Length: 336
Image (cartoon, rainbow, N blue to C red; front, top):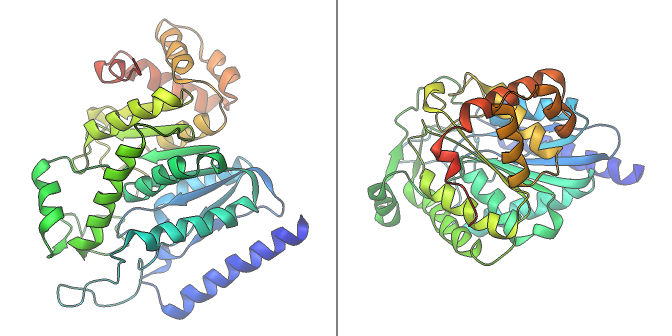
């Protein structure tokens, strides 16, 4: 096993060497690996968002590494490259989904050498890829963390335009803090994720998924929350060990929810949810029942014991349950 670990570490070093040779936009775009000198009980494979880079998973990656897990956050194909990208010379993003699927399957095999169980996760289109993995390769995935996955745009007109337009598009928030990725892209590079999302939604109607944590936000103006909920309901029909959580609009957590550098002043809440789900075997019904007890005033020590969390994380999750589980938005998430 030690030989396998060293071989994998050599592969990771080769990845960093190759990234140095091709030239990246900045240091934040480098693949991030948090590796212990031995295999761990779980290894986490995280997939960043469209036009972004591995920096999005730095806080969560470090937290889970400190929890005792190995963590991989590879730079996706065509992302993070140095260059003067614009309408005339758009960034070199793939326009076929097979490129991404081959990429994540290769990384899944690498991850399996670093841990006994594989946890996958992703933000936005990274969440779409993680959802595909959770359905297509459910026997190899222990848990899947979907952070506001792109399963459709918030507005139907946006979905229609993505289907038909070949134009270059610049992000409205391209100059926002923490944006270390590309400022724009050609629409066909995003269209392939729209098509993957449609297939994932269809597949969830019949296929069993690995257990899924769905995290979304009422303040997210980019993606369709109704399609996220529909997907979760379908997954829950056959996979009861799945959880759903939606951040309240008052927190103003937007689509880029993984770091304080981007849109989330409450990144520790995302980390708390991830830790709780990865370390738990509770079903959605059991999770709801626990929330009901918390709302009724049961001490947070109980949640600490049942979810194997540290004291601070237990208090945070208890507070989150108290706030959100009185909300109709969560009551509607029911498999029946």
